[in-house]
Image 1: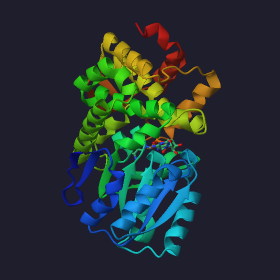
Image 2: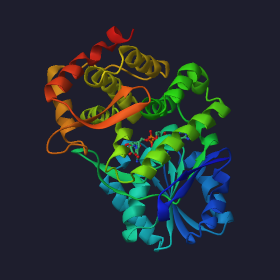
Image 3: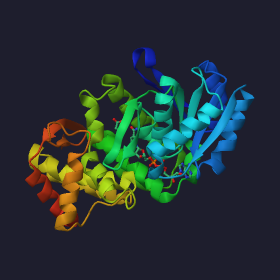
Image 4: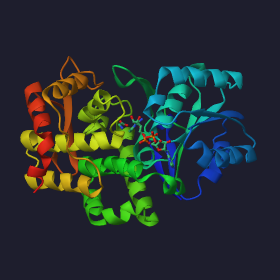
Length: 369
Ligand code: NAD
Ligand code: GLY
């Protein structure tokens, strides 16, 4: 088991990554002196796989857990589902010292965290991420929330978990498509912060796709270190934390215009990062060779890099970008990379330039080499 610290003064916490961690959930909660009554919030896919083990571990450590199961998928990040969760927590008489365990992917983590942030004006929560994406990204850093029809994550809070337990064994049951979607966030860390990680991913992608345990553990820990470092420097995204949104402005817009149905989050930000690489070459001089390496790495991970849209779809996409949380004074701000391993944030681009880049996003193959 390896440990990464998220340095946030009084709200600091540990991320543990290793095998068999689910069985030790109760022990970790006990060590944190969390209240006896709690809720394990999970989704319909994860429940039959891991909820029993989580409940057993909590009961063995003297806790009284309630199981709350929500539908699987992005649709669960909805205020209606939040209200249903509140009702169940209230019926189980959760109190101020009680806590919520988020057992699942990023959807469950964001939803459970939001429920915990707001129920009784805020109770503790513990993250037990079971997707690669959640282990390397969404379970760390305290961004929690749900979607509105107008856009993704438009209602939310910053609410840090008390501990994050990344049980690498749970990744064995993850469908291939979901696993690859998680690799989009892994590649992101290489682009924005760690050129050596990017190089490792280029060399070892076949092993990573086979989920080789030692490699996977190494990669998860390296990503968590980067995220912990960035969040420790800027918890509430006043500045540098924005670099974690590389590729997300277009990615979130793609998810919204396709009504969260066509693309997984990781797939949408794969396309978004390829577009951001193109805009980085045009605006910050990212060498063409490095932009090509970025495209090739997403392709090697089996992720989409192109999107073909007609004129009205492009308009809808640019419109959706204007609804992004990162918009300020009506101007869409981008995160771009001047070179591999470094990112700059807050870059305003003319709408026409973005529209043109989107129009050319269906021809990525032509600038891959
Ligand atoms: P997800 O939570 O929908 O999980 C993907 C699918 O895998 C679901 O069907 C789920 O039921 C299933 N699943 C989960 N664990 C499994 C396992 N071990 N075995 C088999 N099936 C399993 O999606 P995700 O990709 O984990 O997360 C995406 C969400 O995370 C999006 O809503 C995104 O906005 C959010 N996100 C949040 C942050 C943040 O900082 N809070 C960062 C990145 C992404
Ligand atoms: N995933 C973006 C962030 O946590 O800030």
